[in-house]
Amino acid sequence: MYSLNFNTCQYNNYNTIRQIKTENVDNCEETRKISPSFTSNPIMTEVPYYPALTASRLRTELSSNDEKNKYKELTKIADKETRKNLNILLKTGVLLNSDSNDNSTTLDNLYKIATTSRAQGLNNLVIFKDTVATLADPYIITQQFGNIPDKYRAQTESVYMSNQFPSFTGVSDIDVDHSGTCVASSIEFNLAQKHPAEFARFAEGLSSPELAIKKTIKMNNLADNTLDAIWLLNAFEIPYEAHDFDKATLTFAPDKNAVIRAFFQTVDKDPLERSSLDVLMQSTFMQVGSQQSYDSLTDKRAGKFNQNDKGLIEFEKTFTESVVEDKNKISVTYQKVDENARLIGYETDFNTMKKQITDALNLGENVIIGYTQVDGNNTIINGHEITIIGTKIDKNGKMIFICNDTDDNISKPVEYLEDYLLPKIHHAALPQSVVANDVNLVENWVEGLKTYKDLKKQAMIDKQIQIQIAA
Image 1: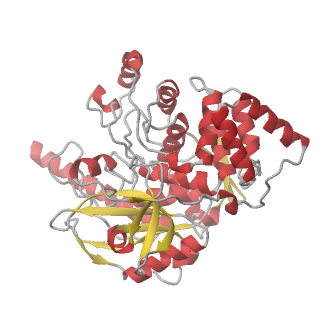
Image 2: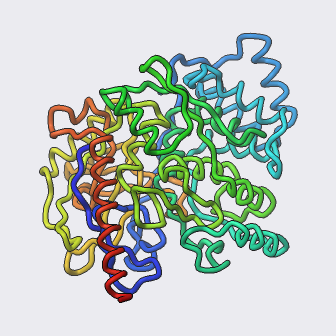
Image 3: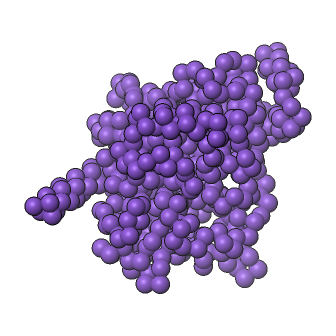
């Protein structure tokens, strides 16, 4: 990862700014409270969705008796809307896509979801419908939490009080107005749009009675040296089994309270709120990035790499993207920020920035970016993650970026002119091949170890200050 230390402003329960030697661009709650919405004037656009273009082998016709029987059974139990979406998935090649970790097809996993038991509190037909709908239109993915139904309120408070989160301030913590899951929901979107069979496999495993899914990844997609890759896996505390210093099988799972939230969204989902599937996916990716410390009841996390209790920092985001997609992702930092969290310049010119992003898009990759928001003194007050999915040129020859935002309550892509978006981009996750010759790369484990040491040092300083104040 190529990155610089970023001093972020945190306003959680404080009126003062707490500066830390790390980067947090995912505190969406504060984005809404402090600064105007980034998407205040977006241009909505209809973008053709061709997920089958990412398939390893395009198939649009059921060939074997097994496939025909599974499809027939699914259409029998599906409602009208889901049958229509199944037909779309078949015609576009998504349904028979087999680009998954175990080579199972989207159809295989949808059949398992619909015909086998789900975890307690979940409904197999609801998960089935949610999965089909999301694959047919990934833009419906959102990070908006739902309310806790009144009849389950006392029970939920009891569960929470019996297992208080480290930053516990009271039962009001479980009323999440704005979530910090924009990294997780962006990764969910990317998985659904680019890897439909793997998305369906995750949906099946995470909603199953095991509430987990295993995935085998290549060690060199984490670090060039196997021992460094193992350091990363251990540092992120993700359960794994190494195989011959070449591959590792990881276990992905949501946090223990995710099923409670997923149940609420099963029985009491309002428009523009997360589906039960969104809950499970986002919880899982938050668990990966936060070193298994996320709590779905409060949308808060702990972990060793971040002193803020909301969202994921850049290093955590890059690790999560890399293991979920089993790809070597590099986070390139573009903005220069001083010790007072003030934006003072850029690491490269906008043309280079634009070229790197478009090169990644030309490789068939979406680009998840972190953007910042500044006040009148150019001090960064917050940030958010969105996904660039394409570009086009306007009549004046300017580039327009087509983006997806999981926090704008708009289930369509939006457009931003390059002059507006490029200055706001703090970092972008890019394939290593795109930036290998342009920047001085620092591997994930190096950046992570430095972040860990910086945070431990800052924690020691804070402790000494508290002791002196108490004395």
